[in-house]
Length: 122
Length: 110
Image 1 (tube, each protein chain N blue to C red):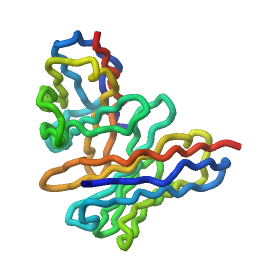
Image 2 (image 1 turned 90 degrees about the vertical axis):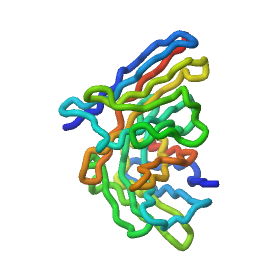
Image 3 (image 1 turned 135 degrees about the vertical axis):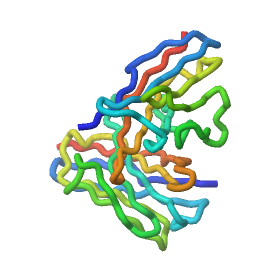
């Protein structure tokens, strides 16, 4: 079955960077039209889309809010996607989720990771 | 800036029917927005209920249905149960590879 397993919780100081991983299994990672989305949720707040990566091509797109601070990459040899966020502030304290998305023809979200808590504190 | 709007909260009686909506502060939601609905209980990751407007995810009961109602996406829950009490988020495609979540609806079943 499809699984997305994320890396463990992180504590970072303001100004630092964090890199969260998302290990995919149970499907063909680089199959046609498969993407990994990254979404975050600050404490007590709603979900916020950050960006995505095409697992096959490596193409990316980022929410304007995070442009210049976020980089999403993937390593196809270990079927893992990564989200790196730089210049962290306390506002970046949140749960970070990855999710699998299949584009045309299904436009399907079918699995979410368990979430990674990133705490930014001095 | 495009904002995706959802009712902040909604209440339904057990066994009742409720329709949550997902709109835009400017413009209309259509099937080309590929609306999806995601359910989240406290302390858990989201779970996708509906994708591509009206397709139920595997294992989702058929009392959850998605549609376009007027200029909004809609999630209808029929025969509401106590464990439907949680947060519901819609996600819309905005074009040019961009997606936006709504602010979420906190559903109370009482």
